[in-house]
Every structure is written in structure tokens, then in C-alpha cells.
Length: 216
Image 1: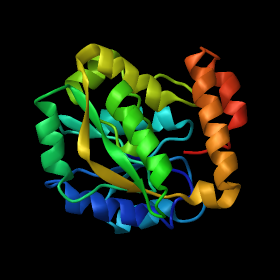
Image 2: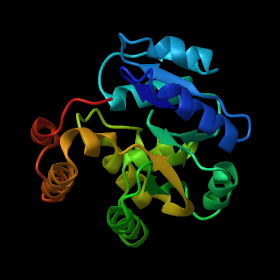
Image 3: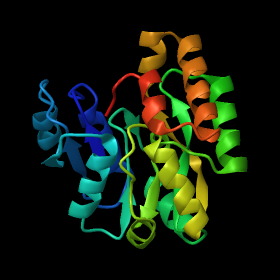
């Protein structure tokens, strides 16, 4: 499942990488009503396209409801799955009901990558740009994504971990560092870590969303 909003420049690459990395995947792009041809680009790349205006959580629940497989992979439009992802997911399912990948950036950020991957490995805290995956049964058991404006990915990962475990596979996805480039690397890091800290301190996601630019 790939939620999109004006991702014509990136979505075809994410779809191609998913098709190469997974055995005969059902790729579903859930678009919020893009005006740049995202839906057309996704369809041309071989994805099934659904329309679901609203939040990213709404989009991913819609994609999961439409999917027919027993394993659900939630992928951002600017994130590429690595070769061998399918085998890694199968292996992880023997350990836990859900999991995620390590992270790498298209323009390497070695210190950031080490910090994020250590956090994932030690604390099992993961986010959507790590290609969260889960069995359909586990996803349904925890009630899917909650309708949160932000932090919906960490919220789901936490509930999955508590329900049936969360495995971190040894392979890394490649995700875009475009927000770092457009907003400034130091500012993006400071903002993201502040939001994560405030969320840990139980500040409501509705308030945290004011600190983060709209995204899908």
C-alpha cells in the first residue's frame, strides 16, 4: 500500500522497486486527489489505484481493506524496498507478527542512519519510512491505523509490537532525504526529534501536527 498526494515524480520508482523486491506483489496506490498526474503515473507503472481523500491513516486503512493478500506492506512513495525484501519479510514472520526495515537515505546520512537503526533494533520504535509490514491477522487484531493526523505509523507499530512482536529485518530501505534538502538538515532533525519527544510525553497528535508540514 502506497499513500500518495502529488507524488508523480516518485511513485513509479517506488512501485518498480516493490515489484522487483517482492514475489508477485499486489501494489495498491491510494491517492488523495493529486493534481500532478500521480494516479496516472501509478497506473502506468502497474499499480491498482484507489481514491481516498483525507489523512495517510485513512489511505492505508483503505488500501488494506482492498488488498487480497495475507501480508500487508505499507510503503511511502519516496521509499524503495531493497532486493531480497520478500525473503526477509518471510523470515521475520517466523519471529513476530509484524516488522520493519532498517533505514538508509538516497543521500547517505551515516550518523542519522546509525541512530535510527539503533533505536529500531533496541527499542523497537519505527516509523512509516521504514516500510512497516504485518500479517493481515495482526493488523485486524489491533484495529488497523487510528485516525491520527501524525504519528499514526509509530502508534500502529507500538500496538503491533505489544500484540505479537515486531521484528527489524537486517536489510535497509532507501528513502528520500528531500525534506532534509528542502527544509534544512539541522532544522528537520530538530523538529522531528522534538515531535517524537513530545509524543513520548503524551502530547496529543492533533497538537503535534501543527509542527509538521502537511504530508501524505
